[in-house]
Image (cartoon, rainbow, N blue to C red; front, side, top):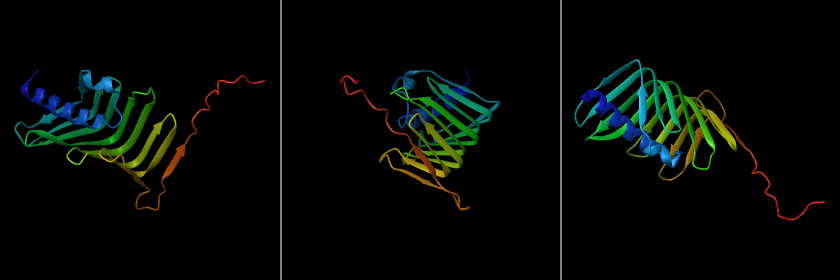
Length: 173
């Protein structure tokens, strides 16, 4: 593996591991990461950017991210931002066995502030509900989720399914 490829893999791994704390299956963080793309262009040094383009696909355990382009930026030797664009799809199994399937035109993960922003045709689905809109902002530090329909008068749509009823343990006639 070339030095540039090693650097790119390290930066992207750190970016995704940090992002994965929001929804990750805990064991995914200990799995190897595989990255495929038609092209990569990576700088070296403390302040560098690595770009993967041409149907970039990242897999690690149950995590799978597909985007036309992935750009990871590091500042002072630490990953600071990961940006995905062009038909972004994120799929992952969570620790409780639920699955998350998120789609949007763009995803911007600000690692310094621990904020993930999904923009453009956002759709996030889990077993117990779904959320869609033009913009969804998730703050990993606070757990705050903010969403909007966008500037064109769009609306946020959310569906929350009830929890399945648990058996009371008493016999039923």
